Image 1 (tube, one colour):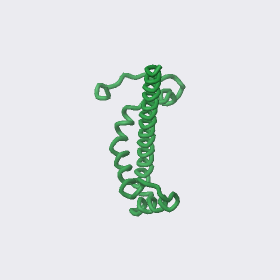
Image 2: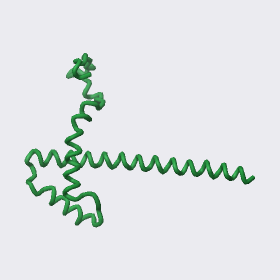
Image 3: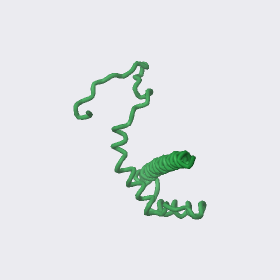
Image 4: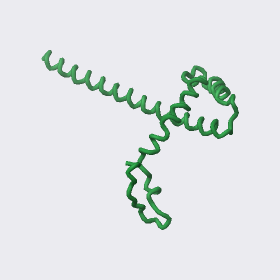
Length: 120
């Protein structure tokens, strides 16, 4: 009987640990997606000249004011999010799957083309 309980505990323990690992991995993926998205938003607005040189500092200060205790959104971290976005945007744009709408021509026919060797 004791051996049966040990096996049950081992199975339950493994299931709990596996679930925790998956939750942590998903949380990390969500966090990276958030940082990439914020970096893109910041990049678009700061690089286009819509926002002035103090924008990131002002945004960081306002976030801290509206969400007390929020961590990871200092001006330095927000600038790092922008760098993260700018370093990876070309890679993600080159390697993403196109939505079906982008594969249709003006007459709603599927666009089929041969990729140049350089794009492969």
